Amino acid sequence: GIIMAMGFYAIFLSTGVLNTVPGLIVADSTLAVPFAVLILATFMSGIPEELMQAARVDGAGALRTFVSIVLPVSRNSVITVSLFAFLWAWSDFVFASTLDQGGAHQPITLGIYHYIGNNNQEWNAIMATAVVASIPAAVLLIVAQRYVAAGVTAGAVKD
Image (cartoon, rainbow, N blue to C red):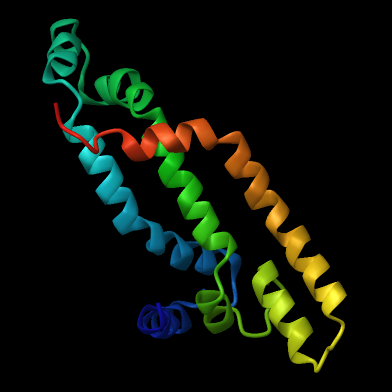
């Protein structure tokens, strides 16, 4: 993470996206790519070839097959990858502290860090803020729980 942050810093500084929200989104998105490739490649390799052949027989092109067949079948895996990507970005500290130095847009983790960093000893307020910061992630996990369980196990065992 730290090595990547330094590389992103150099690239973002030269391209002018340092201290911007799109720059932070791009950096945080890269963390999910290996996990997404692992989960989605494993799942996609388990999709029966007969489904693709049936779509071709019906005259569907590659894009139509992907949109009409592959995406609906892989819904659980896509939701799982998206949820994990969001959670990694939500709890990001390294990229946020490196790529958004004093910017107006800071994630909640960096806000809590700065709040503590001011020699603040009000632990009740710090913990209350941490609980409030975890609410969106908890709600998302509760809502998407059945998709995540199915998405992680899909493609894990070949028939």
